[in-house]
Length: 308
Figure 1 (cartoon, rainbow, N blue to C red):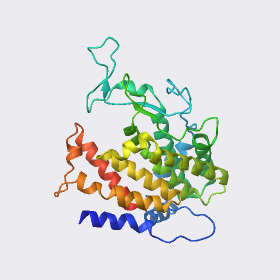
Figure 2 (cartoon, helix red, strand yellow; figure 1 turned 180 degrees about the vertical axis):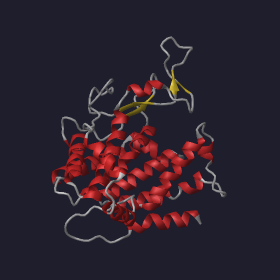
Figure 3 (cartoon, one colour; figure 1 turned 90 degrees about the horizontal axis):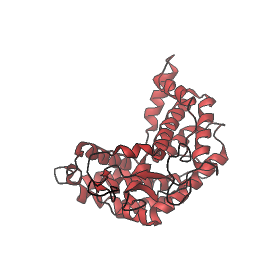
Figure 4 (spheres, rainbow, N blue to C red; figure 1 turned 180 degrees about the horizontal axis):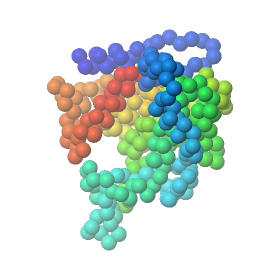
């Protein structure tokens, strides 16, 4: 029953027809009807918390993995994303602490010395606020700022992130990066949403949209073809679900419905029997130290896939 319901919801968009002519971006996660109601509420009110958040986002500087760099990836390229595995700690029995050892649920504060993950998180939060600010108010200043942020992070060759996560969640003394680090870009599903909300604006430049799509196309290829991507695809728990969410979302953003349908039918749907007991429990998540967080993270990914 669960399998049938999720498959039904998840395929509604995939099999829907498209209108020929000028490219139009669809909301993949957010509900357009709900947003229209919120827009009407804003029009009738003199103040709005969402607009306040958008105003604060106007004051933010651009984001890039080339900014605030405290350590460069083994490639030597400042454009490569770098992050350290959160649950790995120095081995007290080793002089230099390496290789690190795993302590599930205990975050090593060393991870916060690297800023690339925060750059992505802050970028998506700001773009979400700006896009909603423009959608609700129609004011170009929000779209103009969003265009700037998109350009710096995804398009400008001086500051753009390389479209890969080869060096994500590395473990000191063990490896240079791991496939499970791919979960750190799950927030990028907010980018297609932002572009859909901004698409009527004259401040969202065609060359920016083209550049962002080019970046996502390269990243999607890396997700599906790289060793790290293939490794993450095989993960059975929330990592696998969030991998599927990204592949399906990015494929739909790029109008690659065939890849989205193939991923959904051959990879995502079979996960249901692996991840859920007949009573709805998620044993792969409840086995973890922070089980509540992982249960909800996995359900959140499933709900978004169903929305797609």
